[in-house]
Structures are given as structure tokens and as C-alpha cells.
Amino acid sequence: MTTIKVSTTINGDPVDYLCEPQETLLDALRDRLGLTGAKEGCGTGDCGACSVILDGRLVCACLVMGAEAEGRAVETIEGLADGEELHPLQQKFIDHAALQCGVCTPGFLVAAKSLLDRNPDPTETEVRYWLAGNLCRCTGYDKIVRAVMDTAADMREAR
Image (cartoon, rainbow, N blue to C red; front, top):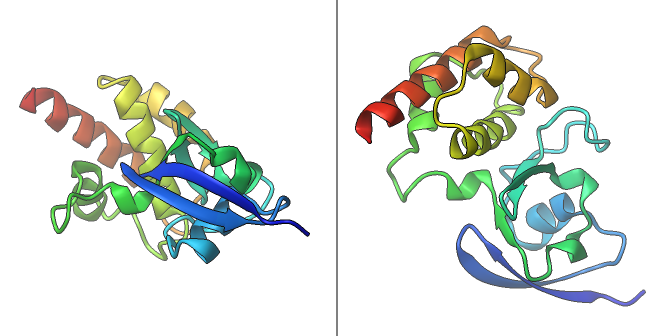
């Protein structure tokens, strides 16, 4: 089988990698690039654990082929913090105890960032709707929703 060379931007940095034609973006990120934050929870796009932002759009990396990232911009959980400084969402997830085992947390954080990038003033209903594609088996959703709402309020105040 022929490998494909992919040139893309990941978390703002130009990146080249080789992948197989049938390889998912999730597998390329984890196995080729060592970006293991996105998790494979289901492999069918039903749980959101592998959420990434592709050209500004929230997607499940398990449903995108690795070769489809050619010439595109990918944002992963690894790009959320600024060095040692946590993104406000990450800090609020800690403050609100909105995480437990951590399998779903990266997907929720990426999805929440995508929402706040599009809508800095979401209602609780909008947050719940936006995060409906992400499943959590440990914490439940109220703490996660409160963390996102609190982050949105702080980010609006900082503007």
C-alpha cells in the first residue's frame, strides 16, 4: 500500500507526516505525531472523545481520513494551553471538578473552545446542545456546563 505525504498545520505549526490511505486523522495524530490527547472512545463518531477543530469546524477525528488534513489547519487539545499557562476552559474544568477519568475531557474542552470561538455568550441551552455530541460516563454534564458558562462569563468580562 502506498503511503501519503500530508502537509498541514497543527496547533499553529507546519507539520508533515506520512499516513496510509485508510488511516484516520485520529490515528495519524496519535500514532504518527505523538499527539495522544484525543482519545478513541467509539471509532464511530458517537462519543466526541476524539474531537478536534479542522479549519474552524468541530469534527470527530475518527471520522476524518488522515490524508484529508492536507493543506488544512488542525487544532487539538495539545494546542489549548499556552506553554505552562492553562486555557481558561482548562482552569474552569479543574475549578468546577468537571473531569474524572479524563477520557472524555479533551473532547469536551475542544468542543467547548469551538463553541466559545463561535459564540462568546452562549445560553445554557446552547452549551448543552453544542456539547451533546460528547459523552461522559463519570462526571455527568452539569459540572461541565457550569465550567463552560463560567469561562464564557470570565472571557466576556476580560474583553
